[in-house]
Length: 97
Image 1 (cartoon, rainbow, N blue to C red):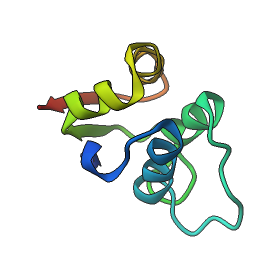
Image 2 (cartoon, rainbow, N blue to C red):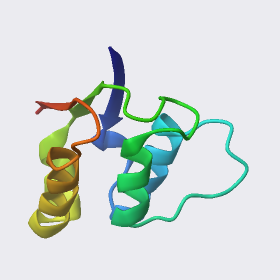
Image 3 (cartoon, rainbow, N blue to C red):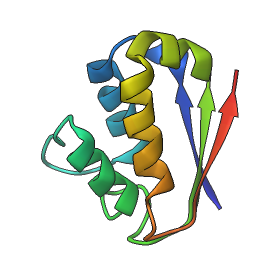
Image 4 (spheres, rainbow, N blue to C red):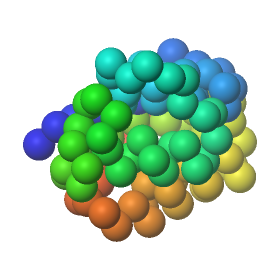
């Protein structure tokens, strides 16, 4: 199963989070993704160069507590809800503190 590693040490704000997602979950696209939750849902669905539509994958989030402190509880809840609600594929989240 494909694994994506989000490293909280690579960003300190929501814009940095979206840049990290673009870096690890998109490849070879000729447009910039929107840096918002709607675009994040689209990226989770697949078809943007790194995994196919509905392909199962795992997200490993390193330094999660740093991300939570940097982004705040409401942003983290929105991100985690999008991952949890992603019903088009088997997306698992592993948190590393």
